[in-house]
Amino acid sequence: MSTRRAINLQLHHEDNILKKLPLAIIALAAITSSCTWVKVSETGSTVAVANTANVRGCKNLSEVSVSVTSKVGFYQRNADKVATELANLARNEAAGLGGDTIVPSTGIENGKQSFNVYRCKK
Image 1: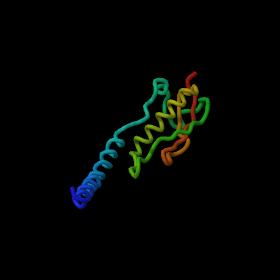
Image 2: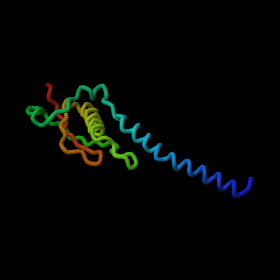
Image 3: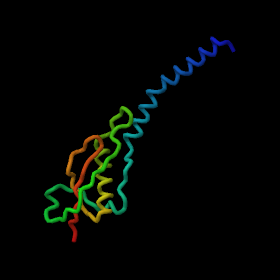
Image 4: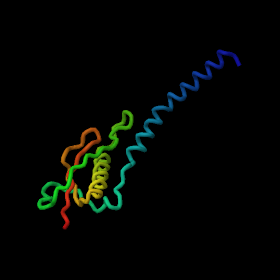
């Protein structure tokens, strides 16, 4: 095989890879946007997500800060899925602290959020 033919084959191969790259990125984005990576544990499922009005008379046990991936490469993940995963993580953490209710204490920023953990049931 001549050197010129080998170079042409290599350039053709690289060109094909570059043409397929956007397709791969779109596929990755579609897959990751539909996934919820953080599941609620069995004990976390007993923890409620509430607002401040719902925790009057409850004992404030702690504050937990949780974080998840909010971006995959240049792709911004779905905000609702990120929020769900943050709440799931906080519920799991709260259960380990003996809490039964969480209330967001900060907004979501770069995939991070803090929650106050309460014990409301006696």
